Image (cartoon, rainbow, N blue to C red; front, side, top):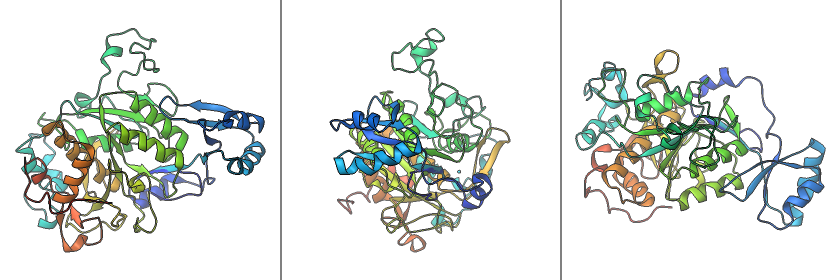
Length: 427
């Protein structure tokens, strides 16, 4: 992910060289409009008096999105903080990428043939001997959408049963969203989930391509419930759209995990508070560390750098177990995972080799889902700590993450992994 000005723009976490082709001409620093905290007395009146109008409100957050002419926005922001109002820019964010499945032998990052370097082996197959599925775990993938008809993804797609059994054009479950059968499009405010960027479909395949079905590849979880929430229509989106995506997710009580393969180098108070609400709900958020090749301790990358105990920031390694050249790193990154040669689902080619912290992230999301299925009462903070504590230290990753470790699936599903308890607290 790359920072672009003061507005938080989230980038999909794909390899940077690919982004050069996709991003096109430089964009303005921030998207238009501002986020205003309506819990502060007089905030809405002050915004309207300056010529701004509410464009979007949220059910689960006190913030609202206001827009107006550029001159009106400038007048308002000059006076807002001096008047004690809480405002945040509309930041830009960027996207970051043994079953009988016939392509499984080509999934080198999962070491199907036992040829992967020891320092790069995440021991996923060993964990599958204990549990390979998380059928009752719902994961919200906030991304560019998903090809929900893909042969390897559709069996693991979340379904809103109230809408499935209801009437078209009616909000059958009363959650404020009409016909959200399989998820929601927060960009266009409708249930259309198509993925013109490919990114969300590829992320979904790493997490939950149906395993042992005689088709394509195997995801980290062979069976799981994936809920796509479209927040990107191109390589960038804004904080007001991400707030809308999170607002939708918080209205689905079954959601246990959020996969965020995107981010920004710019902090945003409104988005931070939204993730605090996510934390209060006990929902895990697994986030890409970013693809800038820099130290996140010195240049934080959000939301992974928010430092909340329900957030796991993920770096990427190559097949030899070394930090990928594009991956961000640092002690504020919790763990690393394979992300340089990942065979996954694609909306047009069927299957595709991807790289980026975008695709390391859903490997860790899958690990979290397997842990939730195996240990239903385990809290988000305990899951995070166990992933950190059981990560396998290697000299090649020293300084790359909090413990200098690659995620190790093998001990995660053990009742009492021997490595747990070496450390007791993490920042």
